[in-house]
Structures are given as C-alpha cells and as structure tokens.
Length: 223
Image 1 (cartoon, rainbow, N blue to C red):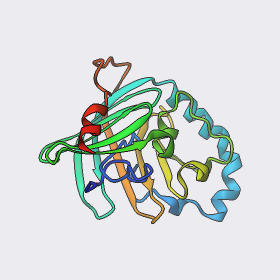
Image 2: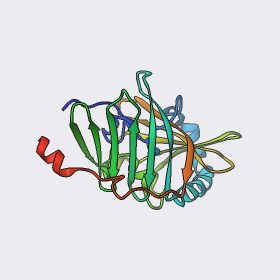
Image 3: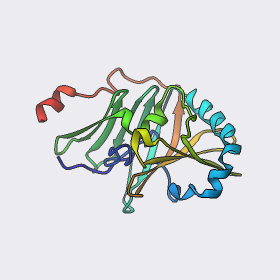
Image 4: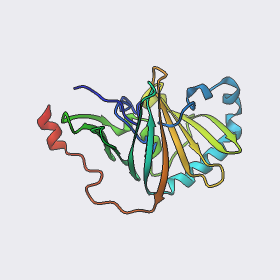
C-alpha cells in the first residue's frame, strides 16, 4: 500500500502520514531536531533533567486536550487540521481537505487511513515516538533525555529510546512559564524532520466513545 506522510513521521514509520501530533500532539517544529544533540548539550543535560521531568509531570497531568495543528513535512509541505489526545495512548489527527488523511491511535495501535484510496497502514504504538508523548506518566529515566535547552521563551527537550524506535527522536518544545506544549518535531533515522505546531488548545474535554476507534474489521478486509 502506498504510504502518505503524516504528523509523526518517525513514529516508527508512522511518520509517514501526519501526526501528531504529532502528537499529539506530539513531531515538532521547524529547526528543532537532532541538531540539538551536541556533545556540549549532552554534558549539560544532567543539570536540566530535573526541569525536564517537572515539565513532563505537568504535561502528563493533562489527560485530554484538543486543538488545531499545522504540520511541516520534510520537503517543506504544509498541512493543517484538528488533533485530539486522551491519555494513555490515544490520539487522532484529522487533516483538513483536500487531504484525505486521518491518523488514529487507540492506545495499542496507530493507523494511517487514506479515506480517498481506502488504504490503512497499521503500526504498534509501542514502537513509535508517540509512546513517549502519550504515556500516562512520561518517564524520562534510562537515558531517554538526549538534551535539554532552556531559553527565556522556550524549553526544548529531545527524547529518544534506541531499544524501542532506533535512531528516531522526538523534540518537544514547551512554554517555560505555563509548561504548555507548543510544538514537536519527529526526526527519523534518515534525519528527516516532521514538525507539528499546535494552537487553540483546550484541556479537560470529553470525547465521543468512538473518537479513537480503529476499524480492525475493515483493515482485515483490505488485506
């Protein structure tokens, strides 16, 4: 099946239809990528891990959120849409027309659905960077933090887990005062970035029971 690029590109390969985001959101913004992981930052990371975990704890406490996203693909392509997140593990990206793409995670799997072509690409959530973003409690132990960069207007945290998704990383950018997530970038093993910026975010929302439902019967019929 032909795969279309998505918000969470490196989401395992998920990263081929949207995001996410991410995320999700959360594959994240322009210019923020593995380039942040330099020897100097790696040495300084221990000093920033406490702040990173504090931000992660605050973000983990947000159980549901929704808003708008703008996604920037690795070739400069730009798409927009609406995202929905419910912890643990659930996310949905609906792309605005003319894009036929939607991305759904039900907590176990992530599917990229092209409604026009009726194609369904299924991936295990546990093998994608979204796993770090959508956990009930974001755990930054075990060397997952690749770098932390604190600036007056943004705190940038680069996460990775080679044992789960190889050389892919997810870069999350937070407001340093409110700890709100602003954008994320997923960098795949080839060094290609997919960035998702989120706006008009609302938290504490309730979703319909079928918001994150994946039609496994339909997927099985298409194989």
